[in-house]
Image (cartoon, rainbow, N blue to C red; front, side, top):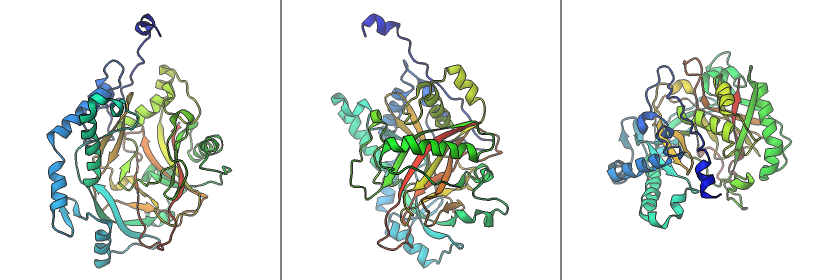
Length: 418
């Protein structure tokens, strides 16, 4: 492209989502007053420069260091927090559970879950960001790298009861876990799937076979749904020995040999709308069917209800490292803590949460390959009539045999439109 063409080329419009909260929801613990960094767009950068500046300014203030020192210098044993007793190590929390004979209902289990205890926004600069290749910014890169490591040092384990999701009707009479009403009320549900995908490690087969299966499942599951878009997936297998590297150009997410062992949600009030918009109008980081909506067409589609659903299907019966989900009513009035993921062309937002003993957790013990656990990551309905999201985590099941195999499953991310 010559300079004249560059000058003539229009800058792609940057979508700034409206600042929305559910009725009764407290403001988030976030930067920029909770508004998307896209509102600080400079020359089409979607707010990435402003987010990087905010991250470096927070590091310079040293807001997390005192908390890290408190955790690491505390005497052995539990740490008293404003939310309850937390533990630095999984085994310490498990000993506490056993010593206090904390019991679970039939089909349930009591185990340690890992929560953040830092009520400040956090920042993560993704591996593809140009910062990591800029020799002139090595000091900034090292500061950001250390700050991201510190996120794990700002977490503790807390005891939680997990109920069997298959028994939801015992806790909510008349509410089947296999129903859209369950998703509307709790933000979690279950579905049945007998996939024809033969190799979930083959990203192209997953896209060709499994994506359409999940899109059909979603449209059939939710009354009034007009269409669904599965836009990416992850494969989890701690024991996988092959190539694990993500290849965006070839729509291959690789394989995750780790599990997200931290209470979190993948989207929030801002990123639920931003992620939908960039998929529809820019086809950005979409591993599924290409989308080419105009801005006006996207406005019309997003003026109706839409939601983001994650679906997790095991490749074999889950015996260890289960996927666990929390029900919306138990945290609907709790502010989330925003984590910003800084790319070169966008700022993603995920969320963390602090511990509450009343959080209502579910799992699917011995989840089979035909059982799909579904969790809501975002819902555009904000009047309080339906769940907005669930949060989730992975964990270690202390009741599993020592030689139990790790979870091997595929998780797809989707949007459902009405």
